[in-house]
Length: 208
Image (cartoon, rainbow, N blue to C red; front, side, top):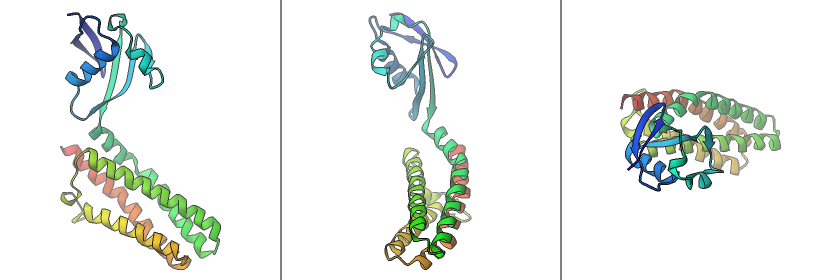
């Protein structure tokens, strides 16, 4: 059985490749035998050429014997999650500012423009909630066991979702004055608080 040498995250690794194996077979074997449980591929290059989603099917059918240089780079869901949490502050700053602008426009009775900003705020918030939910699911995090200022983060998560629901109900009633107050004095502070909460979650993930 021929031995194939490839680079995994910059380190040389040996793999027994079956006679007649394709590049796809080799990649599958590498994932099966060399990867940790939550590891995933971020890039692959063969003979100096990058393999992308667009050319993956054709490249995987190539004979493994034709590959002189194979390099694979990976990441883990945990590391990627920590990186996302540590870099999300700028996103939340922008979202918090957008919420305050929407509040000002509702107070100025600029209904159409205010509602345009409002839709952007809700989309941005739902994107953030989705990211947090994905991170929690992928890493099997229990927010009831992680505290922020002596309060379980699960309660902070529930408060954010409750605020979102209250704001949507108020918007549906076209109560612009109440909506402006909810946006500025309830939602905006919650969004900014999640900058610190995200940092706490990232810190907890680094410990394990």
